[in-house]
Length: 204
Image (cartoon, rainbow, N blue to C red):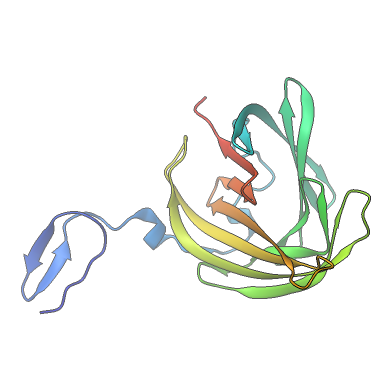
């Protein structure tokens, strides 16, 4: 007898097939972002959030500035800017240009429209951080559909993961992991830059 599992919950029997009584989770239904318009990137996903730096929670105000095709998220604590994220909106892509002081040339595509969960691609270029010379880097970009449970949610999201390998000058490359949660009509709700920097909303 075949068993179909659409979500957690009690099972009800329908003929020779068991069917989940609960409705499938939203993330299983919304897996495609047709265009940047689905994300409303010209508006803030929220204004009050928190930045978690190496385990320290810092309340922040999130501000948005647009400069041509660039989208700047400014993270302010007590009125002072402490971090900035810079993205670039291309004709069919959303690209990461700068992540907390680390810049990428060319920018890394983190969405390619229409964006379906499960898509993946590779990137190669250079990464620069502070006064040090740019280093060769490469990345593997993967995606999946998830439900993001944060204040204001839950959100049906496309989770994009970027696995960076950066020339270290040693026998093996340095690794860096970036993660981005995108939700329809809410935009970039959460992001993680490695294990040391996380931005997410808080209850207002």
